[in-house]
Image 1 (cartoon, rainbow, N blue to C red):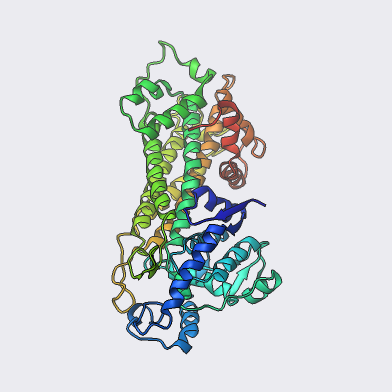
Image 2: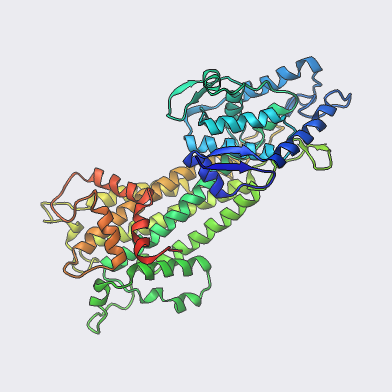
Length: 512
């Protein structure tokens, strides 16, 4: 099993993906364990101080003015986690829960939170065992951290609440920990607060979305190239020197990808003649690199923000390197929330352009010789008519999901927490946006493949032919109407699994 070692420094997005999505085990480095022990000594020195210290000897939030006597402090930490594990709604996906637990552990490993070493080790053991606490859709306002989601995880490490095993079986945390030889944690001073006061849920979902979108934007270039080819469009507009006139880096990469996918197309060469009277293609073809390229640059910006957050130690209060324990506001999720919303805009716009290209294939007034709706016998058959309806419905939903969550705020905790980021909500809707974009691109791929085949006997580009051949392993070619939903799902899986991109890159080499 792949192992991710957690030190005092930042994780990479690839580390998050490996643990969250691919089940990698985790371990603390010796350096991290030493730093955890050093900062814990600071907290224990304060435990008997007559001066109140937030989260150590006081209540929380609006109740921070109450001094808590020593004999009630274990109950204070327990009560904090139990009361804050107040989520509701459907279960959150396993990969999201693993991501947020990993990122909380990464912060613990910095030594800035003051937890005990056994508590950090318990988080590592739970992740490595594949035990996933049940976390719910609703509960986080994205300020004071993702409190409710992180509390459900802390509750499980305490041996309470429901969890799922690696095979998905639902059980109780006490049984799961016992069966894996993990001792439930009995929280000490400050530990409850340290386990729940971070941006880990929204950050985990951001890291996963960056990984997904980097893949999907290369797929979008493949689909655009297939559509340009199948609609008898021109690849001249993708020339490197033209894009150098507007030196947007993502645009140049997208144009290079489209050129690579279209290279060697007999379909394209068939109309590179003086008889071709078309001067300019429609924007959805000609401007594909401008849109997908801008999306790439936006994802790169989001990745930079994620990188800064992965290098952060978010808790309140924090133990500073020189041994001070200080309150702060670093738990506010605004930096992450803004880019989560930005990426939802990107997903909606790339999908919108994809749907417009699909629609052109289906209209005989714009498809340059293809049958209406790519039907085998138009009128008797409807071809891909309703596949475009499905795309349009998804794109409409994506436009609604592009409305930002981060501009909203509902005050909480008796007006102590009077401005919140709603970053968790932004992350949840972005996950739906990524799924919608995947499906829209899959329909374009399905339709463009059919349009290209209808150009026979003209041969497509070798890269195009490779992705069409990959599709035909599960979806039949041109013919009379068939039950279309399973074919769309096959195309979705081809895109999501990476097999569509792999088929192309086996011909072109790695796309940008």
